Image (spheres, rainbow, N blue to C red):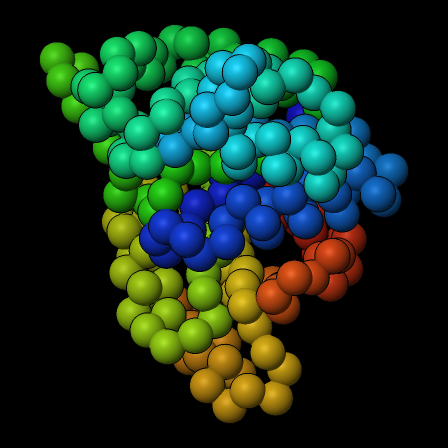
Length: 226
């Protein structure tokens, strides 16, 4: 049976997609049949051929998945706003059944499926006559989570709040990865220690800016997938 994980972040512009790409690349380079899926993507680039879903395109390229964009992301919006607002502006609101179907189709193709969220954990995906929060998708698909956070100032607060939000909704957190981390930086090293001490959740890896590879033992990475 395929294993999966949901990647969330402490907010926008944390580097969630960058780290997600390194995760999938690590698995594929180690010989594992690993794939990627995202339910909704906002802020897509406009080209002659239509909208380019930047996050999915980036992961597809870096991890060398060779998958079609339609199979990687179900809903693509050009407005750089939350999916619920983008769909109000552009139409085509997210339908949970379509997300479930697309996710399950990906599970049939890949042994390890990494699903990336939109923004931080408190993200409205749809908010009209039907209301879908990001947590609803996570629960519906039976996923555990991995939190991506910036290593810098303020991250203790952001990580603790994100972790507590997930715990209060009975969503499992398998680990944390700190992005933009610098070895020898007193603040970064202390943030790592304090996050683990307060949340009781392990920081399973750190990523430096512009890293080309994820520096984590492959078996440790595989353990977060369920």
